Length: 125
Image (cartoon, rainbow, N blue to C red; front, side):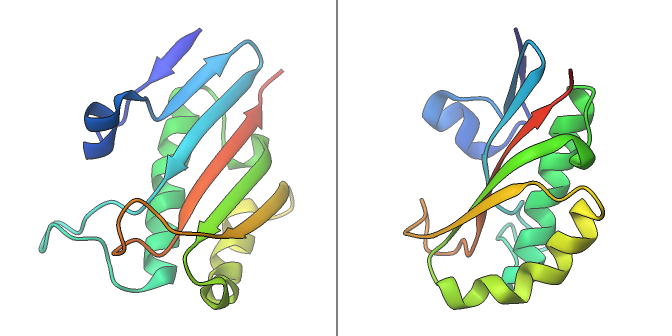
């Protein structure tokens, strides 16, 4: 088993890693946007947060020897379901011709400044 750490603030605080490679499977933890370098805060726009979270997930997958095309399952968590539609173009661009099975859940997130959290599972067998 291989554990992948991204250095995100919550990993050390909570006690988890960004991703775990277990056999042919890569499990990527729920991922929110990275803070902007200028402000130290995540972007206020849901699409920018979505793209940032996808970039973090893509980097974790690459370290595991996988890519977004290997993702078979993705879960989206949003505090406001109405915000999800704005993310669809970014999600289509990220997954292209290899869309995963997906679920969207409206729920509270760890901090109200986050507008989307994305969790993914990839198969590299």
